[in-house]
Image (cartoon, rainbow, N blue to C red; front, side, top):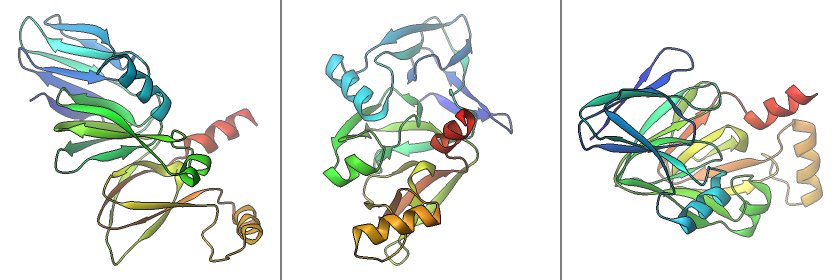
Length: 228
């Protein structure tokens, strides 16, 4: 299996070593350099409909970069669009949901599909509308987030509330609910007022057993600040 290694302490590259015949998929324009033994092509992984679903669910490109060790062993360097950290996740027994822009690369046994969200999640969460990205298959997945990444373990006895803009990926077995407030008011107006006064717009309430990958920076808030 290809070997993924983050390289660098701040805004790291993803170093990938492939043996002859091995291949990976990565987000469009992620490749920085590669050995001459490797072959780079643009592919719609899973065909047109799968590519369309990924586009709608996570804002990913129609065409992914497909890198294969065609002429011998080789190495390549990948980099995400946004500055920040990388996390390597084992996919198989555990599958993951991905927030917008979290996908960087995966071994060929992992595919990115989509599933339907409920209407509340679709309207408020900002994670791909009615569709949300979800992994399938077996192998390794690399996600990226804006800033430093932190892995939080959620348990049945310890549900957590997280600002939606800081969520990168989460165990698909976790249950999550969307809220416009961290308060307990049963009134929609009361919740909206609390949301405005607390500065929290949309939060996700996770429960169950699994892990959530968080980023220290909120890309949506940063873009709003940069435009101000």
